[in-house]
Amino acid sequence: MMERGRPRSFDRDAALRRAMEIFWAKGYDGASLADLTKAMGINAPSLYAAFGSKEGLFREAVALYGETEGTEIWTSVTDASSARETFDRFLHASADAFTRPGKPAGCLVVLGALNATDTNEKICRELRDLRTGNIETLRDRLKRAVAEGELPESVDCMAVAAFYVAVQHGMSIQARDGASPEALHSVAASAMAAWDGLTQRQ
Image (tube, rainbow, N blue to C red):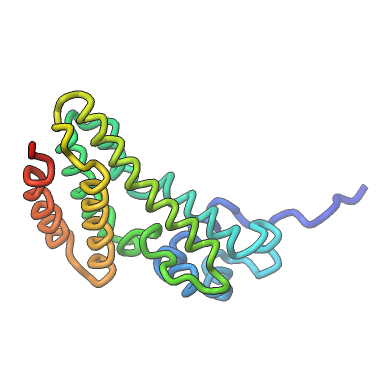
């Protein structure tokens, strides 16, 4: 009996990783179908058969990015012994992750799609939700520090979290513009110099 359909003639996981790097380097809108299929080593019908659409491919690429790239940025949230250490490691790990040799510079979640259009509105919203979730993760770490007595109750946890994420986003843009790891570590150190002023008792 003949088998139904045509078996895939490519490594889906490897193709997805190559697509992730194209999206990471060029953004959702900048990555053309020709860019993606060339990098993945497949044709357009195979891409659609495997991933459904460019949107579907991008969503899987973002998920893969979150699982495999820069994971050390977020381990500090659970592993660091203090809130200050959490934020210090968060920024310095970002400096390293955003300038890793052989990888696109900056952060896919930050740079993947910023300007909403008729063709990317859902993607923009999904990335915005991820960025908001990152702020909330850091806010919750600060709330834990308040509950444990490390920080005073007067600390505006959301404002502090939003400030440090804004610094991290700026580092991502600077990395894309060619900033060195040393320059980004300097930015991280400068931001941490503001820690006491942001978290002291008022």
